[in-house]
Amino acid sequence: MYVIIGFPNGETREAIVMAAAHDRMRVALRDADDAVELRKTRGGWKAEDGRAVELESVLYDAGLCRVLLSSSYSHAPFRAA
Image 1 (cartoon, rainbow, N blue to C red):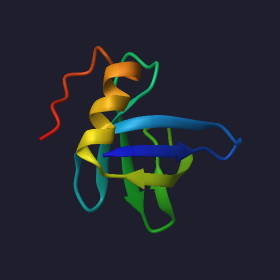
Image 2 (cartoon, one colour; image 1 turned 60 degrees about the vertical axis):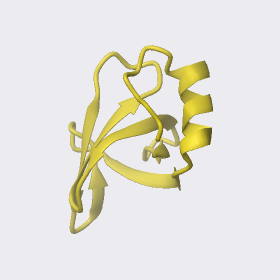
Image 3 (cartoon, helix red, strand yellow; image 1 turned 30 degrees about the horizontal axis):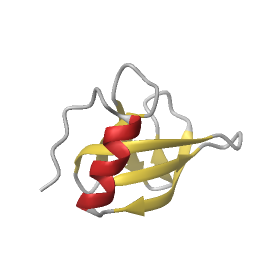
Image 4 (tube, rainbow, N blue to C red; image 1 turned 90 degrees about the vertical axis):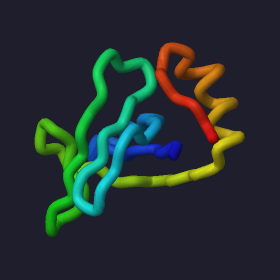
């Protein structure tokens, strides 16, 4: 899955979801060296540092993810089905 994550300061970041459950999500942010874990709380989603985040866009399309990964995430170990 491809997501756009919004932060309270107005920043948005593109990411690929590496793993997800109903209350957690591990994502690879564009131009970041490490993956980030997001946790769902009663108040919404939060990043590891406690900042609130919003899932602004969620897209699941294996073909599009392959294109995005080949151009933006060439180092990411991802195989679309």
